[in-house]
View 1 (cartoon, rainbow, N blue to C red):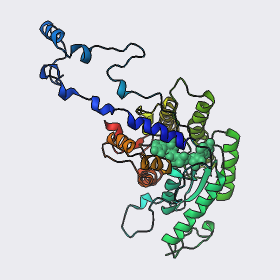
View 2 (view 1 turned 120 degrees about the horizontal axis):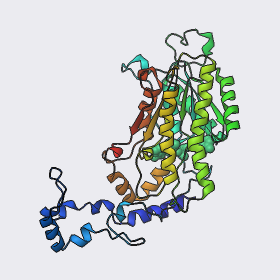
View 3 (view 1 turned 120 degrees about the vertical axis):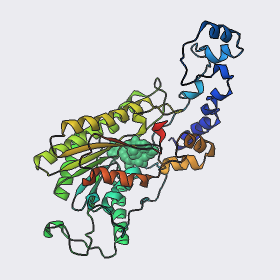
View 4 (view 1 turned 90 degrees about the vertical axis):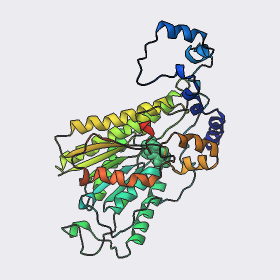
Length: 391
Ligand SMILES: NC(=O)c1ccc[n+]([C@@H]2O[C@H](COP(=O)([O-])OP(=O)(O)OC[C@H]3O[C@@H](n4cnc5c(N)ncnc54)[C@H](O)[C@@H]3O)[C@@H](O)[C@H]2O)c1
């Protein structure tokens, strides 16, 4: 990788003058500030006054000849930033379980429970997918972790079960089918968590993985598509093969799993099913300064796939929603920001809440959108971004 490359480029980002400093309206003479209540038309006397204004040239003229610095340059993307997604096995290490999802005695609505459900989480071996899987297990679901990295997915599946035992010492392993109500009074059933290898961008792989999951769990009720990645290259330099892979994992992967699970739900005449696609705030805004056009477009596609499939399947008991996270502190981003305080400051200064999100901040949103607590919510995009996209 790229980790080092990322750090080098991160340093370059931090070294650039902050584009926020260019927001210098308040420094302009009063007659040159635009009032939101006054008409914007410029009268001839104003035009005359502007001509003699020493700031006129630099503040209103567009000096935007190609290749030259001009107003707004610092608010755009920086082509020198190049970040490649690490190869499998080269990710920074992180604790397997990051989220808090243990037992509690506080009352909440029963509709939030996923007791007796089976959920598939793509990209579930690590990062946001794993933490969301933990939320589903804590809410009573059995979970199938699907990932390119089967070994890590298996370790994570075991870690989820171990954590469940720790949180629920009185839990027991028993066959759900033998207990009609899916409950043994006073005892929590240890969830079944399985790991499956799959390249989500490969249709044949997806089909066989779904059959494998159905044969191990008997059914599927829910899907979370978290397999996805981002890279930074300027649009002109983006290696075409890498771009195709990025779209393949983020878009095709979401599409293939969603249609496969919908087909299964329809065939088994499921009473209800629901899906959550993991998009990104980048599907609605353009991040600066790192260039990432294909990722932004891919996440816009993911968001709109959720809306389109929600409408297409609205007559069935299948709901589809999207979660669009902002900047989240996963192992990769944490490593970079820990080593670069300036970059941390630059990114967080753009977030109204003034801090990056924790992976566990997605536990509530994903549980809500999958569960019966959101039965009339479909086609929604829930932004979990600390307010980033409001500004
Ligand atoms: N981390 C953030 O700040 C952030 C912000 C917004 C959106 N997202 C989105 O959230 C999702 C998860 O991101 P993350 O930060 O947890 O990433 P991550 O890299 O930590 O985890 C992604 C997982 O997907 C798996 N994966 C990659 N390619 C795959 C493929 N072809 N088939 C199957 N699995 C594959 C990886 O092995 C990994 O386990 C992604 O879709 C990402 O775009 C992340």
